[in-house]
Each structure stands twice: as C-alpha cells, then as structure tokens.
Image 1 (tube, one colour):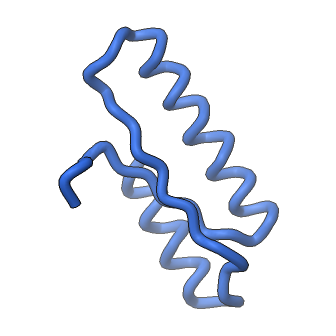
Image 2 (image 1 turned 180 degrees about the horizontal axis):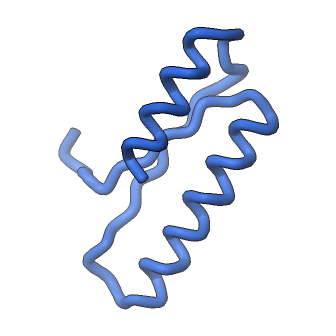
Length: 64
C-alpha cells in the first residue's frame, strides 16, 4: 500500500500540482477488524485523491 501511495505522489508531482496533501497514519498492531477498516479507508482515500486532484500518502511508521 505504501508503494501505491508513493506512486500516487510521484504521479501527482509530474503533472499539475495537487490542491493539498494528506498523510494518513495507521497501525497494523490492532484488532483485525480495525486493520481491515484501515485498509478499506486507504483504498477509498487513494481513489478520492486520484479523482479529486489531491495528494494522498499513508504510513504506519509514527516516528518519521
């Protein structure tokens, strides 16, 4: 998923500048239902970003 986010950000920087940028933090060390919800949200917001012209990235590394 992170690779897809990086690809999306790279694609956005080549063409028109994004209107705004979003960085989502999520964890995989939770209950399985929460992880599945986060994965669905990442797909949803990635599609929204492609459709609406903003940059979307996600990470599960809270230290950087």
